[in-house]
Length: 211
Image 1 (cartoon, rainbow, N blue to C red):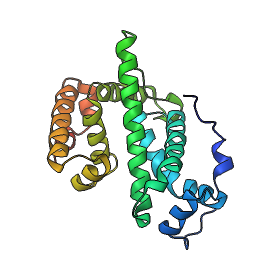
Image 2 (image 1 turned 90 degrees about the vertical axis):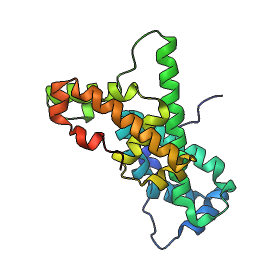
Image 3 (image 1 turned 120 degrees about the horizontal axis):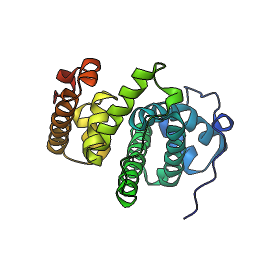
């Protein structure tokens, strides 16, 4: 399937009207109204871009993923039963898009018989060489987790979502979220403790917590 065409981000951003509620915006999106498409991007893109950049370590990759997620949102918005929940629906679509991307990268690394791809865009991370190297190491550790464990960990630690919010967003049970978080936290803590430089930078007590 050919990739959808992408307009430069600046061309689809417009000034959002806070008086337009999510329900009205959802109806506008379903009708493919130009104002609704521009407003939805302006309203939801920042949170999607932030989440994607934290997960992928690259601003450019995050921008590509955000646009892919937005295309999916436009395709699926007509299936939204409760139009007042457009924001959570948009976030769920973005998480599913990110999940697909992480799975694709993992399969690609297996098929190429090479290590995981470096997910850090050095132009947009910490300015010092040592900090960039440590950030790269941490993303390499994230690559070693399963896709579900990685997403659960990032949504809890980077996005500060509750266990219930993660379960709803990923369409899994709260017990599954807790198991994935405990598994990811335990493995990351062990790996980080094995690298003194990373252990000095990252508080493993926080990483290892399941709450």
